[in-house]
Amino acid sequence: MSRGQETGRSPISAIREFLELESASGILLVIAGTLAMVAANTALAGWYRDLLQIPFKVQLGTFALDKPLVVWVNDLLMAVFFLLVGLEIKREVVMGELSDSARMALPAVAAVGGMIVPAAIYAWINWNDPAGIRGWAIPSATDIAFALGVLSLFGERVPAGLKVFLMTLAVLDDLGAIVIIALFYTSELSLTALLLAGPAVVSLFVLNRLGVVRIAPYILVGTVLWLCVLKSGVHATLAGVVTALFLPAHDRADRDQAPLQRLEHALHPWVAFGILPLFAFANAGVSLAGLNPRDLLQPVPLGIMLGLVVGKQAGVFAFAWASIRLGLARLPSGVDLRHVYGAAILCGIGFTMSLFIGMLAFESSSNGNGIVTDRLGILAGSLISALGGYVVLFLVLPKGRSRDA
Image (tube, rainbow, N blue to C red; front, side):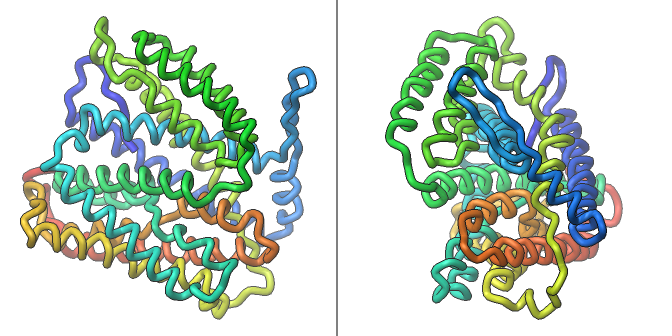
């Protein structure tokens, strides 16, 4: 993820502020996930389950939404997270790294490899399980907060090009996850709700074409779109992405404070310090009662763990290496293949997005153990990738300050 630029800030200071914020968010994610695990495996387990099932109801006339807390977190708060992801993707396409095809080539090819290979490993292990195969996309995700958090531990030893490579790869990874969710993780579709969503999308288009720079109208229409998508069977979080794509990236009156940058800047701390830790707390609580280390060898957790630990680093590094050898891409200044390999291992930290895809894959499964074992694989694979990436980067990064940091 990244942050918008305020007036007068240089690109370097904006990147530095962004990385500092992501590092802090990663720490909060660790704390939230740890608290969830403690709560789920102590005398607090009953309280933890009851907390997540607290009902919240919103009603307007005869229209009502009555859902437990965990659903509000996963459907509403994560829609705000995807709104921020959409803003970042659009900004990168319009004015960032994704607007330069030469710079985009290496992370783009690496991101493709980082999605294909982990999914293939998982599918190979779970091919004969009709229920388990639904989780094929879980190890394809990268948690940018954790990955950049680990990278930031090395401070000025990290070349700037390596930071940009990992950020751009993660943005493309998020884009791939959005496409996967839209195409493969939808329930039975409601034609009526989808038809009602149409005018909302048209309204967003009209606001954009008219040059409306106030954020409130977009948020209002986006909320209506979220309600329609929620009832349609397509996952409601995608409404956030669609809304983001229509936010103007330019303002003739103030080029540095266009609606896209202003909203991205406003949302980022709320997502980093609030929404993502809440999501982690609500979804990382895995009860270990009755489980033993051999449970990690079951097809679902094994496929996820190997996909994250082996598939991610193999896919990212192999595709990046091949693109360089074929002349399709080039290494950033101050970066060599050893650095790329260390970053590739960090891409195996799947946590937030992997948990989210796992929830979509197994929430309707009749096998109640499926969602437990998938979380075991995510937690184990992410932890191994974080430790492995740290060790490799510790060994290969310059001992002093990088000339390109």
